[in-house]
Length: 300
Image (cartoon, rainbow, N blue to C red; front, side, top):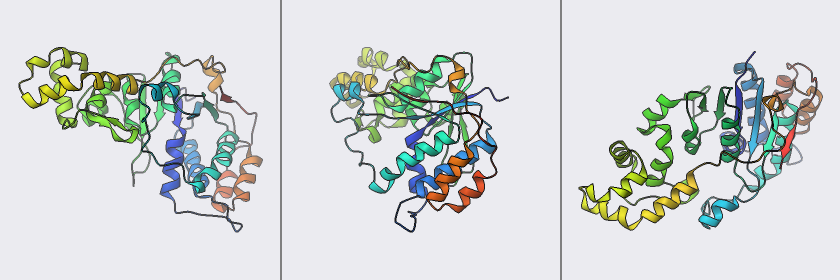
């Protein structure tokens, strides 16, 4: 039995699938490329991971706490394409019919819900399926990430050693590292002129951002020293923005058993694939075992 809990950053993989496959549509014009991609993704996980516990975790509503700190948070992100938007609801139905739980919390981002779940079940190994570098901050001996990249078959494991190799800092330093470098995807401005190498060097020498600010007079590079002085409040703000919330109340998820993945609802899956004229998915889904019972959709 596979006792690992798998937490999927849902929209990240939906977007990835949408962009990976050229736009497809039915004879009546209904877009279907993201559905095909996620259907294949579900089949791949079923074949290679054989998950027993897990959930697809969704963003739900504006992240109000972060927007209070920075109204421009994520303001540079383009809106969801209409061709993808109309696929979201059938995608959710497909994922649920496959037996996976769907979890979301109003006003919170998926990363925070994932962090809460990963840190809640302290006796279980957790694999987070995401490419979001923010999640690297919760990696430890029990929590790892499974990442993907263009042209890559399967997942790459990002554990503590992989974090150190990729970023040259420890997982516990990721928040400070990203606070220094900034995160363009979230519209978070870092310290101008400070890239990954300089950020890692500073953290190796001083340990954390608070120590860097407190010891700023010891920094020999005058220009860097002055920049840190001038932007210390911005850097502290960045820490608040980037730190994941690990204590979100998730009323419907009390024990690991709430995250059990059920056998697929074969009839529903085939119905969705046929409606969207995805013949290869129909063939794939027909190979699955019949449904036993369904788990939950937790929307708080």
